[in-house]
Length: 481
Image (cartoon, rainbow, N blue to C red):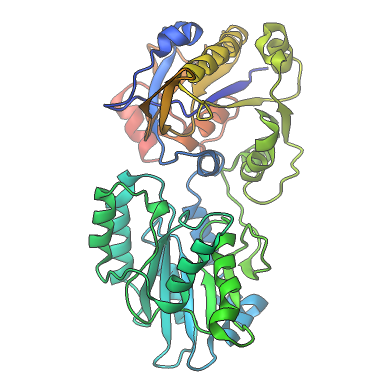
């Protein structure tokens, strides 16, 4: 039975100008041999770390599925029967209080759903609603798109809503120190942080200063967006990320600021991945093309080979952010046995799994020499996989995210050089059923890699494959399907 194998060398990318050059062909001779006969293309990634990369890989762009779910299940008559929504309405209706939305501006269309929700509320004429933007973008290359998104949101907001403060999602550390608490107090409760009414100019300056959006120190856009007692907070999120550092900064400082019993209810649109008890309008969302759903739909099984410390996170995303105990997805830890061809052959040929995902990381390297050693070690496994898969199974060798960091040359040489593999990652593909004369590999995004691997073992036109028949007409037909 034909199977599909994905070998992920996370952090591997296309060298950008100015990056320290590592000759992959010299360090990885077995991969060099595979490249001679493999299809090759590239994918775009906006990730520089495994968490967001895993989400995109296993779920794709979740925005469309989430917004569709919100439209069909929340922003309509179903709200009347939603107890959390009714509690939210009661909290918002308290006179002389503000409503605070926290939103990650990853897509400008989120403003439409935000306006729709506000329109369901019966508001006093002078009701103040503030939209606080949490920037999660990882690279400075995203500023131009981010400025466009924020400007669109600002100019299409309901008349009740005003942009309040803006901050990088990772500006506050996971464990807050006294300095972080002090700054959060000034930002959240006093509006005494740096003030910029023209957000696009501020973001342009941040881009020039090469400060990643996710690390932006919070700034205010007006004098009145501070949190007051009896205000209501709503995380209008289209993702289940963890905002516990923000919650801790707010609720630990609130008693000091209010000097009375804190009554500041908090809600979320989608159930948050959090240690706080925050009621949500929606518990779970089904992602049609998540690994979990595709496997269930076609009665297939996947085995993921990863480090023990990454297993729970991979499982969380692979199952669509919902159920994490899925009999269709198995896990094993990486062991030295993977360097033996016989073990690889038995693993693929003699187990009931149809899809195999090997999950390796090169962004943990201590120095350049260590990185080269890691790659040479992985090359042994790649050689074994290529030998086992040839004329039998599909094999993809790729990455989920880029790498951008300074590393010393070696343990004995502390001269630092820049490794810059940001934005573009390679994809190598082998499958005996796709001859070079008839097929090509198109560029795409990281989730397209997973769907392409699944399309090699299932017949499902809803999955988007990078493997295309050559010819302009064929590709045009597929593009518009």
